[in-house]
Amino acid sequence: MKRVIGVDEIDAIAAGGEFHIDGNMIVTPGARERASARGVRLVYGGGLRASTAPAYRPRVEPTALGSGGGDVAQAVRDVLEAQEVRSASVRAVITATGINHPGIVARISTVVSEFGGDILEISQTIVQDLFTMIVIVDLTAEYKRGTSFKGFKERVMTEAGKLGIHIAVIHEDMLKAMHRV
Amino acid sequence: MRFDPREIRETIDMIGSEHFDIRTVTLGVSLLDAPSKEIDALCRHIERKLTDRARSLVSVAKDAEERYGVPITNKRISVTPISLITEGLPLEAYVRVAETLDRTAGSLGIDYIAGFSALTQKGATPGDLRLIQSLPQVMRATRRVCASINLASSRTGINMDVVALMGHVIKDVADATRDQGGIGCAKLVVFSNVPEDNPFVAGAQHGVGEPDTVINVGVSGPGVVLSAIQRLRRMNPRASIVEVAETIKRMSFKITRAGELIGREVADRLGGGTVFGVVDLSLAPTPAIGDSVADIIEAMGIERIGAHGSTAALAMLVDAVKKGGAMASSSIGGLSGAFIPVSEDAGMVRAVKEGALSLDKLEAMTAVCSVGLDMVAIPGDTPPETIAAIIADEMAIGVINHKTTAVRIIPVPGKGVGETWDYGGLLGELVVMPVSIYSSAGFINLGGRMPAPITSLRN
Image (tube, rainbow over all chains, first blue to last red; front, side, top):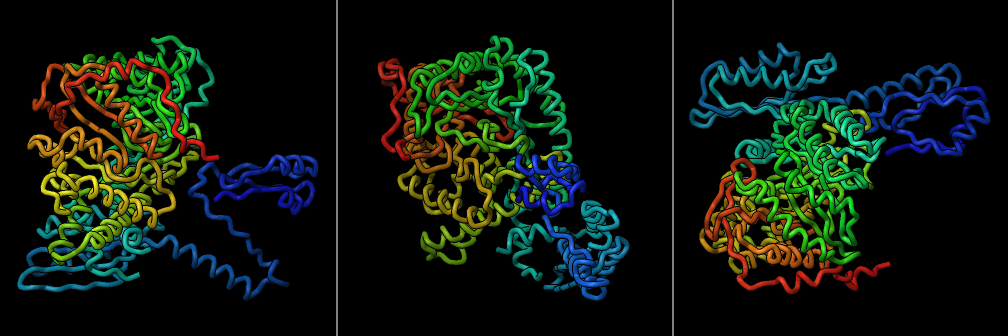
């Protein structure tokens, strides 16, 4: 959703100030005229990547929350940060099936830990000698450091080949998209 | 968020054994910004713009494919209907533009580039006619270029002059590509009510109401729906049509969600102002066994597609697909429904070979499917007026029912009824179907514009 910048937004800026415009904003002709009349500089930037630009969120400056900011401002920052982390969470669902033999769980969890992943949940059953396992791995921390999901998947698949079992790695977003309204 | 092991299993099955794929990620690119009509400058502009916008399309799509584990079968580009850009230029310019499109798509690793199109529903400009005239040459000279001509709409009626012309042009295109079984006709489609955001070829185009660049996604998934229906009927042999419809809706929801996830990701990563447009949730079959719309109809209890009841079963299928998709996403567009291309669907091919499916039944089914007579082979010696009349019938169904209909028909050079030609790949195997032996020439030669229906007066 684009945000329309009208005359009111320009008037809120002190004369001679700057107004930053990113790809998610549309400036009305009236706002442009007002900006030039009041000497407000329109600064274009932030690229044209409209769909990737973060949704507009008013900046909460510490000063806006009373004198000195203090605990409340910090709390607001924490909440905002926590939201960002949550929305960027990267989790993988690994399922493994095959003939049971010693060392499957050990090998998979070694790969996960080598990759800096965190095993959130693991369930495993053996019916006769058929082995099935579902592991949910949190890759958020590593992802932030620039490791790719693709790389992780390739590593796990290589390991599966060596173990002689069938493994599937699914991005959590795919499951969420398909199975949650 | 916790997931049920059954949900995880289902997702793995959909991707692994039920042929679930994203049929196409199509990048729509506007060419309305061509700064010049001087032919060299125009071709340079087309090449530069397409290269700039689509440079990373293939690698980005590949990344998304690996990340989410769903194969993306084709990467395609659609452009502004070319007739809007080349109006006023001589015939050679059309061929030059087509060759530029083909070469650029090739160098970018794009499978098909569509939008070599003209809009003639109310009348044809000299440029539209030149584009149509250039088609045999263009189809011989290019591999990836797809063409479409809009001949009719519910607001304007049917342009019978161009319908008649297309009867001849389709034969000429078949002849121009006769050494490949008339494959040019597989990349040429005529429409009524052409959608502006359809990602599927041959009919894709980047309409004039679209943004500069946009990603549209076409999902596939007949195999997924088929497996779900088979599972339902195994678990509950007494399931009624309501339960079947419900099952289709659920699967359609999931397919659509996966399509939107991938479409948004690709649009995001392409950057440069490219936005996500729509998911076209058409069930698009492939010649792979089990990835067939015909099989879905047969799984509902019709012995062979084409038998009585096929139209009703298809109507329910298309409606349930739309309902599930509309619930899943607010960005549904394009054709959205179920395709019934004959050669591209192993179940349809089988039905034709066994004499279960006739052209007449197929036409009836197009009244309720999402497009029209698609990938139908007819004898090479069919008179042009008969081809035009087949088109006119299909256009009438679209115009009166306010739906998109299309005809992609191949008069296979040198082949008669029952003979076959295998294109291989997604295009599949043609089996020549009989057409009426009686002439429609008198009607087609009336010409003119068939008036818009009374339902066009809606304001």
